[in-house]
Image (cartoon, rainbow, N blue to C red):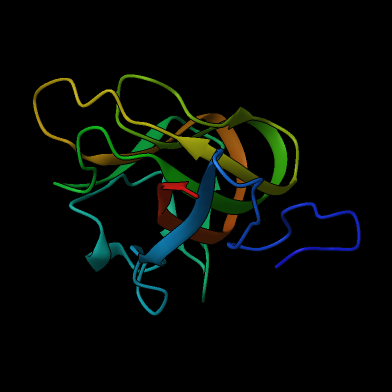
Length: 150
């Protein structure tokens, strides 16, 4: 979809004939939106995190959440999170090696992330470093890019 200045505002674009254009879209939701905030969805649910009735709460101590075999090598992801923060740092989502989002400021965050996938497994991690706050929303989708020649 194009606006009046022929700028890309959706997943469609128009290119000058003979030029290559990139069309960006998103795959399906990879996070179970009905269960991600339950301890049973995570393979590791550290005692410093707790269920909060539709979100997750960190009590101000260090702790990890992880879900095994989540990432795909070479795939780029769009991540959306909403956090509230009182103190400390929120890390994640990430692969356990290369940090994605690191913040201590409340808000909505949307960013792209490509995991490094170093051993042992391509697990999804969320961590807290003396983070006292909540994770209120979590969404992860594959970024789909296609080169189109006209």
